[in-house]
Image (tube, rainbow over all chains, first blue to last red; front, top):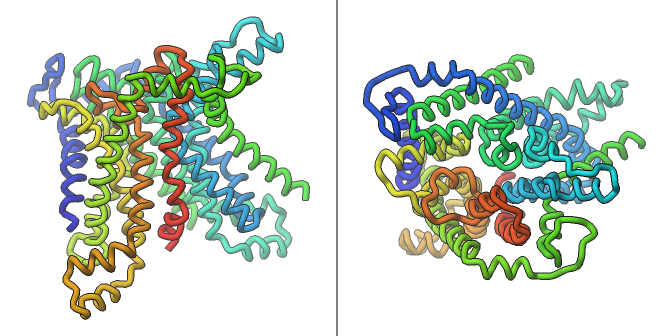
Length: 273
Length: 257
């Protein structure tokens, strides 16, 4: 009974993924061609190339910043939803979070495009009010635009993860802490924070992976100043026809994601004990 | 008391930040004039008329519908079978199968898209809506599987035994007992799958052929020019991606068990 599903995932994901890994060790022979010789040079090229290095720092840095902002910004809201709202309002709030999570990713990006663009709402308002004479072009096509959109798109996930972790904290624990004389800040840092750390790490890693591997947001809102790693991978494949090169870069990215995940979850567990 | 209201105000602002950009798009999709500027000049449906009279948008809507519907049908059949198989029979390797079926959800879309693209190029498969559909299948199967497996976990198999005792064959038992009981969850899962496929842009970007889906048309239109009808077509995309809402209640019940 499970055979069809296994076949779908196996045939349309596991095989292509393994194929990609194999390709990353082959030699590219120009446009789209591949020679079947084992080589490690794609990896060396990928890691050594100064342009790629700059873009990699940029992509991973932007992803880490977005993930950190999401988790930190989500904490107060998750705390409020979990502990300060009555059940009915809590359910409504969670419902809204789920809605925003499912709200079309592309539409949200487009929304920021219309808000920050040169003919967008912010600029026309500023000109209308006489604050500036010309549209501020740095609003869009910048890292800041990409960062704002990332936070807007991925924040609901952090809120959801943290809220569901906080729902598992028994309210008595918070009352006990308060009865023992702990200030709210101390209760938060000593009770709530440790008990939700695993969820926070999960939300951080998820957001980090999806943002630093994103193609669409930097392409729409980043302008020429912010090429993304995903952009480079796609260029290697589509424009340059260098499949082994693109495969190597995406394998390096995947490796970084795995390392970030393993290190953070180890750290969390180690600190948790 | 002051602290509490501070947190409340913060949460309210956070919700405003989450929803106001999308609200702007929806509002301006009904705008009378082409500008994206306040004050709002009044309601009209002209941008929706523009969308439906444009062959590019119409084709894209049809293409997206086709991909989403085929994805839903295949995933419901394949995913339900897998859900029953994994939850009912403790066979050797059932944990491995479960892990395999959830595995795509842990992969970044870029990796799935690139892996598929390079595989299709290498095996000389022509990129088309079918390759897109295959990509979507892989991407959405874990989510559907999760929903169905959660429902089947708390399924009372005694009911099936009783049906058998009363003389019903395996097929009749499935059709008359099992299916009606799990149907609400299947529908909920199917709506989630539809929403995900309808809005998918990342894997689609790499696996698309000559025919574009709706998200890709929006993406390339936005990149090239300012076209107010994008507001209207975005609102349609939004409506499709929020179809799952009708199933939220059922999902919450299933996944909390």
